[in-house]
Structures are given as structure tokens and as C-alpha cells.
Length: 369
Ligand code: MG
Image 1 (cartoon, rainbow, N blue to C red):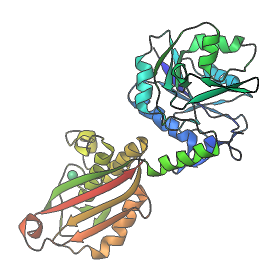
Image 2 (spheres, rainbow, N blue to C red):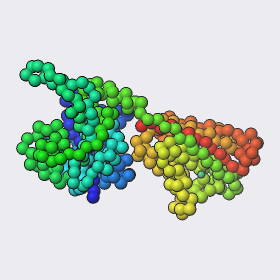
Image 3 (cartoon, rainbow, N blue to C red):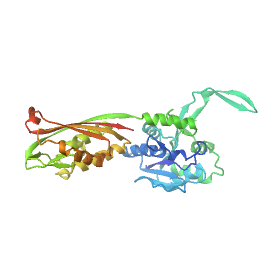
Image 4 (tube, protein in one colour):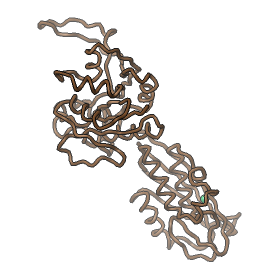
């Protein structure tokens, strides 16, 4: 059983006006990217095998690595069809790029409700009082019978493709409607009110509010390495002139290690001891800045961006003030400009730091997504 996550981003967004909404920046990234990030999380959980992004046929956008792109058509149905032709998976989750806040939990619910043969859509009870207008007269409408349909919607790919290939008109609002019109049954899971569709101006303002607030996390990292003769003193990727250097399996860059652990901890990922174990020969004398780069890529892969990283390092000798700019610049090549501060403290001749036996680093990272 293989499963594709299809993001429909080929619409013209005429209702909102201006640039199609799926390409506007929301919280610093295009609206479509929010769905790609959700899909990547599902991919890491091995719940989906492929990500397909359906773009307008004239789009010059290169999809992110690992994402297949398909050219959309003149209607939603043709765009969906294009995606179903672009993959060979047994099942598809069809999702509107205009719903950037669909959660991973919702997708897990849909997948859990799959039998391999059924279709499943998220439904949300209508909370507003409803009326309908018939022949110019306003009539009450019982909201207890009314549900909002959301995406992603899960379908067996071949069956949906056949329906779309044979559809004589494309006037359905979503694939679930086509599915039901053909007399098929639809299973459902609970939708989410935050998974609203960005269509009108008011929706856009609401989406911006949610995206700007986002989720903020702080992580703490700590590391210590002994100071010994005959080793280099590498701090944040910079080889500092010193009589003593740091001992360890890798290059023992205590600052890079604490920074990586702060980032990984904030993102809720395994720490560097688990990701790059000292028992693995591959990491013998490893360049720890590469480990930091890899750790940061994993963190960004979860949709996080770094707001700020702050580190404190305790070392008796040599004085590090003259090296500070080089160390900060070196860390910035990995973490981005203007995103970090490093403070150096003398050991005050107290304890193992003051006796030049070891270097200690504490780091905190603040992430947002
Ligand atoms: Mg270490």
C-alpha cells in the first residue's frame, strides 16, 4: 500500500484578488509550503510515500527537492486528474494549498480511517445559524444537518481517477462531492476549525494572525570537553591558538555541540549523542560544524526557523575576546546572520574550568514555526 499527498496549488485565487493566494507569503513562507511541511512530517512518519505539488501550467516555480510537480489544468478537476496521472500510488490525500493549517493529527486520523478501498473526508459541524434564500424568500435551515467539508480528502487513486476521467462536467466543489454523486459512500473524520480555506480578505487577515503568532519553543543545550595537550582548540568551527585543546571523538567543538543540542531539544528531536554516536567510526575527528549544519537542517525540516541562539562558554585561558567575531561569523554561516550571541566567561580560577581542565558551554535556542 503506497500513498501520495497531493497539494492542489494551481487555482487562480480570483476571489481574493491580486496574486494567487497560494503564492503569497504567510509567516515568511509561501502558503503552499505550509502544506508541503505537513506532508514532510507524514513522510518522515512513513504514512505517505510521495508528495505531489500541482502548480499552474505557466508557473516557473521549482518544487522543493523530493517533491514531484504536476501542471494544473483549467479546472480543479483537471488539476486533480493531472496529479493522479503523475503518481502510481494506491491511495491519495488530496489537499487544497489554500488550507495552510491542516494539522498532521488530522491527516493521521484520515489515514487511520482508510480501509484501502474507501474515501474519507474531514467534516466539521456548522456552528453558525443558517438561512437559505429560495424564490427571494429567506427560510431557516437546520444547521444540525449541515457539515463543512474540508481537505485533505483520502481516496483510492485508481477509482477516483476513473471518476474524474469520465466526469462529463466539472461543476463539483470538491472530489468528495463527485464521489457521492456517483453513489459511492464517504467515510468521515472530525475536521478542524483552524483548517479553514483562505478565500476572502477576512480569511487572509485571520491566517496572518495565526501564522505570525505561530508556535514558539525554547531548547537548552549543554556540553563539556576536557582540555589536553596535543589537541586543537576548535570553538564554533574556528581553530583558536592555544597550548591546550579539546579531547573527544569528533573535533570536540564544544560550542557547536551545545548549539546543536539546543536546536534539537527545542524541536523535540533526538540529541547529538543519539544522532551522531561516538561509537560510530564515521564521526571520528568529525567536523562538528557539519554536525551542526545537519542538526539545523533536521530542525528546519520540521518547519522550525531559528529566532535566536544564545551561548555562554567558560574557559580560563586563552582569552577569547579577540576570536569572538570569527567565531560568531563562523556560526552564522550555518545558522544565518544576526541570529545568535556568544558570551565568554573566565573560569575565575575556580573548579575544573578555572583550573583549565575543561571547557563548559550552555546554549539556548528559540525556534518558531
Ligand atoms: Mg560534545
